[in-house]
Amino acid sequence: MRLAVLSTMALAVGMTLLLSEVRWFSRPALSDRLRPYSPGGMTSRSRGRLPSVETFRDVVGPLCRLSGERLSRVLGVREDLASRLERIHSPLDVTAFRVRQLGWTGFGFALGCLVSLAVRPPAVLALLFIFCAPTLAFLLVENQVAKASEAWRRRLFLELPVLSEQLAMLLSAGFSLGAALNRLADRGQGNVARDLARVCGRIRQGLSEIEALREWAALANVVALDRLIPVLALNREASDLGRLVSEEARAIRRDVQRGLVETAERRGQQVWVPVTVAALVPGVMFLAVPFTHALQLFSGS
Image (cartoon, rainbow, N blue to C red):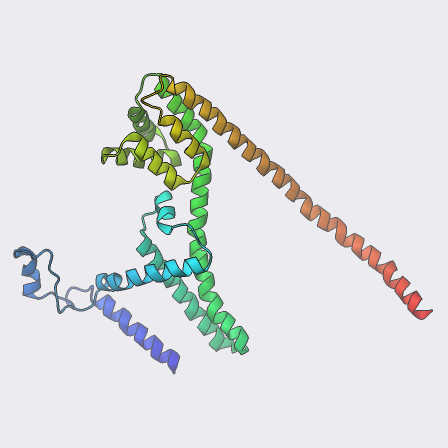
């Protein structure tokens, strides 16, 4: 009975939101249609209309954002969601992401309740179904953006040596720092090019080149980029900036090489894990047979 009542309420809310988008059902009044053309009418809100998707989003969005932030802090997520979404150039803002995330969490909660009602397990298992399913759904969505952010940072780190070398060549050829950044942003195709396009946009908005680059470094959170920006900050002081950037490019490339060697060695060690398990299991079985037989002999004597 409770499930039927909840389903009826959810259906009523959904039908109201759906019908509010149909023109013949939610036709605005003449005063509401003329209000935008009156003095100060663009800032006034229409009244007396049915709830729509926009009003529902305005009410639920801040609530989902606040509750999602608190829940993520409780579950151990420390990095700011806005920074991660901006880092990967996501079309979603924080509110839209939290609404979608809590929507999947509610779906997990409903699924856990349905499974508990269908299977009727013991009380402890029922509580696990009800509370673990929404938590798992919340963490899965959070893990997707975390993986995308980490993959973006990794790709950015791998592209930095090429960017530094191209920037050094352009600076040595007589390009200014701003012109070199614009050229790399226009002709590049990777993650660095997309980030540089945003940096150039910030420069056109009024920031200096170094301020925009420092903003990019703070958002990207890559150690090699943090070392490159102070070198570029010598733009107006050093006469051989191209050579300095080229040396920094070689240092970044050595860091990338060390990382690749470390990854190769780690994967080489992981190869021996199944081999070791495959060798130990039969050996343990062969040792267990004489050991069991010896125990039987001692117990019989």
